[in-house]
Amino acid sequence: MAVKQLGNERTIAYTDGQELVMERVFDAPRELVWKVMTDPERVTNWWGPRGHTTTVEVMDVRPGGRWRWINHSTGGEDAPFTGEYLEVVPPEKYVRTEMFDVPPFNEDPAMAAVETLTLEDLGGRTKLVSRSRFPSVEALDGALATGMISGALETYDRMAEEFAKG
Amino acid sequence: MHTQHDPLSTTFAALADPTRRAILARLARGEATVTELAAPFDLSLPAVSKHLKVLQRAKLIEQGRQAQWRPCRLTPQPLRDVSDWVGRYRQHWEVSLDRLDDYLRELQLTEEPDDGADR
Image 1: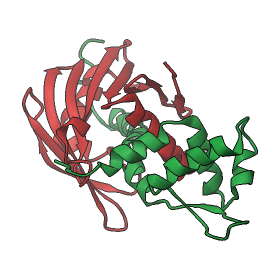
Image 2: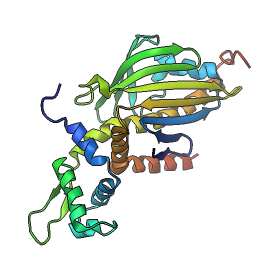
Image 3: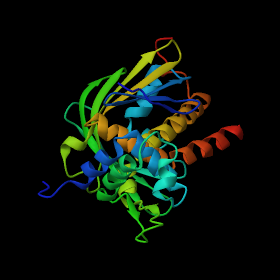
Image 4: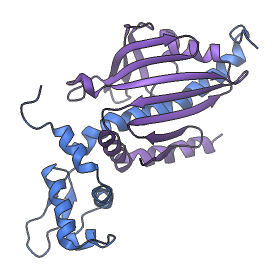
C-alpha cells in the first residue's frame, strides 16, 4: 500500500491506505492542548487559514454531539464544516465525523471522513496524532494529488517564507 | 441520491492513476500536444491516448480540433471541486496546527500554569 509523505517542516503528514495521518508535537501540557481543541471559545483562535475568522455555530463535545464550524475567507466566502462526535475521552482522545458542508460534498453521509485524534502526554509536551479515514483509497489518493496540482505546493512555499521570517 | 453518474466519483477514478496525474501536472503548466505529453513515459502513443480519453470523459482536459496539432489543455473545474474536498481539509488542518502551536505558546506566556496539573 503506497505511503505518500506530505506535510511540512513541523507537521508530519502521510497517507496510510484510506487514512490521512497528521502528527505534531506541541510544547504544551496535554490538558491545555485538550482544552484549546475542545472549547468552542478557544477554537476560533487557531482553526483555519491565516487571516480567516471562524464562527463556531455548534460544538457539543460528547458522543452524539454535533459540531459545525464556519470558516470565513477574506474574500467573503464561507467554508462550513460539520460532523458528529462519536467517542470522547478527555484529555486523550476523540473520534468524530467531518464533512465539508456544501454540495456535492454533503450529499452523501458516506463522504464524511472519520477522524480519530489522540493526544499523548510526553511530560510537559504533547504529541497530537490525527488519523482521518476517507471513503476509499482512490478518493484520498486522487483528491490529494489534485490538491498538489491545484496549489498545495504554493501553500508550502508561502509557509516556508513565513517560517523564514522567524 | 444520484440517478446519473456521480461526477466526483468519475473525477476520482480519473485521478487514481499516477500517469494521468502526471499528465495533469504537466498541463497545469500549459497546453501540450499528445506527443509532448507522452514523452516522459515509457508508453506508446495509443496507451497515452487511452489515458487522455479517461481524462476527457471526466472533463478534466479538452483537446483542440485541428487534426495535426490537437493540443490538450486543462479544464480545471472538476479539479477545483475535488481539491475543495480533501485538499482543503488537509491544507486547512496543516495551517490550523501551525496556528494552534502559536496559540498554545502565547497562552503559556500569559496564563497561570494551572492547566498542567500532572507535572
